[in-house]
Length: 180
Image (cartoon, rainbow, N blue to C red):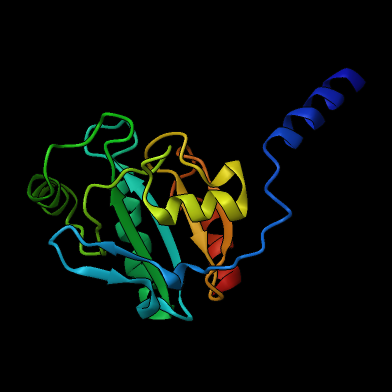
């Protein structure tokens, strides 16, 4: 039993978030292009909670779009922004923004903001994803599609959630409600 606890402790240290975040920048210092070509200026989301989710049309987690929309409908009036960031970083996204937009609207009736198809990991990642990793640690870097980054009202990463965490799960709801 001690051996298991020791190994779990070592494993948890590997995934521990960075304690040295200095936040020279906050999310409000960034922009991202919307799926229709306009600029999404994060400054417009000041004093709101932001859930950034990298999405993909051909992923086993794609059905999470339903719960993301439900989350948006439930909490948008209380100050939650759900931002879907379609990405082909894991080779599971359509080839163009128009097809992604149509897919989301037709299949999931999505009306929360969507970004353009964007790289979310590695050296070509969008600056928001690089910023999140730099300030929150490895847990902020998407390991797969439907990775979730929760940003608090101060514009800092509050927490991150793996793809397996459903948007309407108790842990997500509690995290969001605690900072709204």
